[in-house]
Image (tube, rainbow, N blue to C red):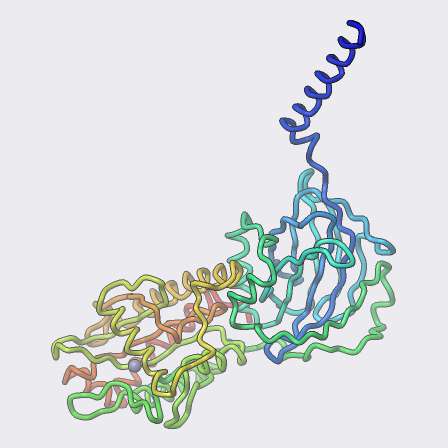
Length: 446
Ligand SMILES: [Zn+2]
């Protein structure tokens, strides 16, 4: 090899080296925009309920964040700048599978692409995961369910606060391992391809597969949970009063006053002396799409001098040792019914459920503060204040939930009060005021 050839070869190698260096250091050269290659909607069955499934297929795995918006209800999937290249499907069109109505894909900012799914109901995501490519591209899957306006609001507010979290990172096996809810997925996935051209809006050729649901609620729904019951008496007072009797009497009075307000549909967890698991109580509240969950209890302490009302909300960390012990003893009520196999561990929940749980905890704290403001003039008043611990009954991730210990059965004067109809009437009056105030400020619009 002569000198000139060697020099050319050397220069060639050098330029290849420089070029590859440029590719490594310059993100613009190495970064290729992702491509949406498919989109479809369908129905899956999640815990005996129909859920709307939205699948977005893309060339590379999707980095996605979600938003929920109102008037009209819509789900927004934001992703880094992505190209729409779906065979036979325009970037906008109609969807005829309820509750989805229409979709559109666009680029609202130079580096953001956005897929919007318009919904006719306040359906919120219950599960989000990614799947590796099978026949098509990478799949990003969102399952949505209508659990009422409050659940939608909790989810919307949680997603807005966490728009930096990439929900495309969780795989299906992650989500299934972490979420007890939705573990039983029916394999039948009915696929309906979107229509890319608007058709006659009066013609709905497909049957409505999702349950029609309730008409728009004209009243707020408040779930009243009378603590304990049946084989679980709860605390026993100095004079022998059973907690389960007091909680039922108080729940009935609160129900009467809430109904009398004309703005609220109260739902009782139990209206007789029966045993209910803590999970069952939450399930009932969710089935009724409750806007608030209030659990009524009466405390018991070692010291006969401990007295007054405490308002508790859920927290991973207890506010004090006493609160932690109380939560343990209230949670033990479940053991009376044998081991509860449906118990889920929120610490191991998926990113999405953790996000909703945190938001519902924030809203619960706000509700607790409202209650404390209204009960100041009762014996013991708000001195014990707002406290928190890991109460299992407060773990609904889609509605504000509080537990009110209405007084101490271990204190003679509290016990005497709790047995009085007039005292329970006064307490319910203040709780009703607090509930109405909270819902008119923070609840969904009627
Ligand atoms: Zn109790």
